[in-house]
Length: 131
View 1 (cartoon, rainbow, N blue to C red):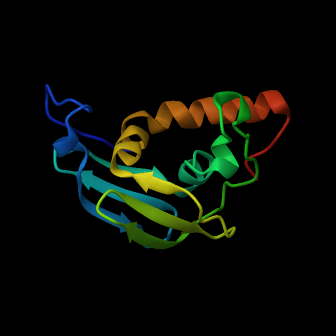
View 2 (view 1 turned 90 degrees about the vertical axis):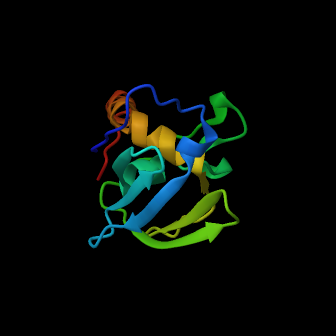
């Protein structure tokens, strides 16, 4: 993941959460996003799939979150805007129920590396694989 942003920017500033560009990469392995603040990132499809904001993945409480294995090669096959606040992604495994709000995309852009490391550690602890 790559990211850059201006000094003093606040992720609580709604204007800075607004994306100026969303683009599925040519190989469909990531979502490239640039925010009004200048922050830009390439968020891997695998991370977006396993951290989908859908009830299927997140459950209805923190205790209900599911560990999703075997998504290393998942790709993004569709992106559809939802109002002026989110995008619905369709993944190659058929998952399409998560709405990625601009604020959540920014969170993934800022903390994606940490989330991916935590995901890989959880898989290892559970004896599961990304493949």
